[in-house]
Length: 249
Image (cartoon, rainbow, N blue to C red; front, side):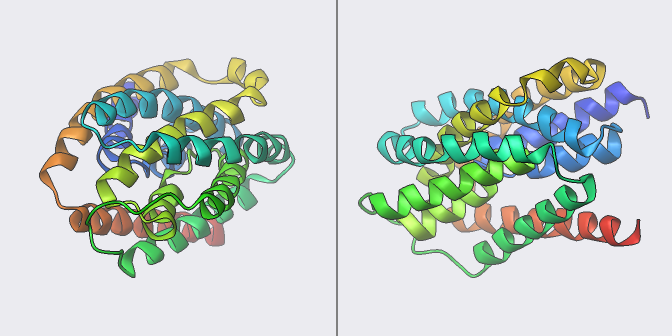
């Protein structure tokens, strides 16, 4: 299978996850960029930030039109994460690729297990809890900077369980957080963009943007519980494969 076809397929799946689940795109993008397209872990995290930022913004517009973005909560999360995201991006360049891969897999597994434990009833969203939003936002920003992920696979559980948003509002709001965190981390990785394999990254990003529209339509047809379970199972599968690869190297 050619590089172009692999990039298009992987990008479409990434966009589908972001559009439907408000996260999980980067947790799929990073391993796809490493194992399918042959990028190094450092290059893959940079490319993932770029792809996820563009795709998340596209999906954010669609979810906002549907009324599923809690602007105040999202901005508070995002503002708290900007500084940690930039610090994490500076640290990431000094870590071995194997450490980045293992840390990425462990975080994905923990987030999946937390989602599978269940969520509050999918009723009206609770009132904003500023303290929890700031703390969660700062942690998500650090993860974004170090691991090259938008943080949505952690933001969705945090917004549902920690802040009290219903699942659909958490999905839409997380896209705002992902967009801001990804752009903040990219500011400190701008010098690495020139070395990317654009023949692989560009079609990947284009397919992801198109996939995000289909993902948004899919999210409207599934219940919050079904979205949560799908998200968690996908995360566990990716985490297991990445940990296995790290151990067997």
